[in-house]
Image (cartoon, rainbow, N blue to C red; front, side, top):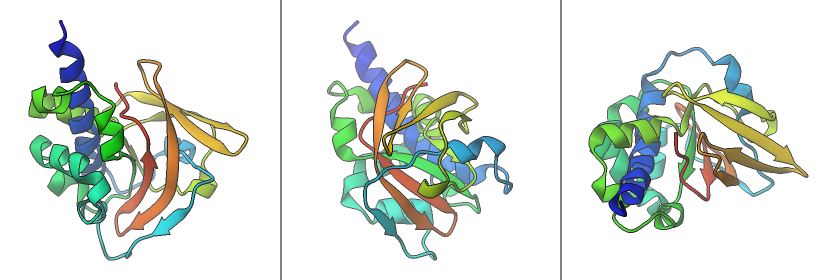
Length: 184
């Protein structure tokens, strides 16, 4: 019904937040698939290397929806862990593209699945991005596309989002900002 898309969107938001947590709880070794992390020609930002990815996101108003979803999914501690992680972080504007009420309708488990779909084990900087499939922390794959210097990511549902900012580096990995929510 009409509440299903809202639940899916909310789950995606939560999953993205959870993904950040799941990545923090994953192994310390870099995943061989992490070399396909997204890159963009957009400006890059170097955050305080002493801040975790969760602290960086919490300090940026553009990620308030994501941070709320991460908290709801119970991923804060995980994503604040040692890592390293690469997080594809949707902005508030990206979440706003979802049907109204989607995020609020998701259970913590649904949010966790969606959020962990936004996290890849290992730290992959923009300059190291290569096209191909990459396994996320939730076990599903994303497809990284690079064309004319622009990086896009295609999810399991066939939806494609743009990487709009790269290399927000923290003490436990890196954030790449995306303009949509990825769905497993």
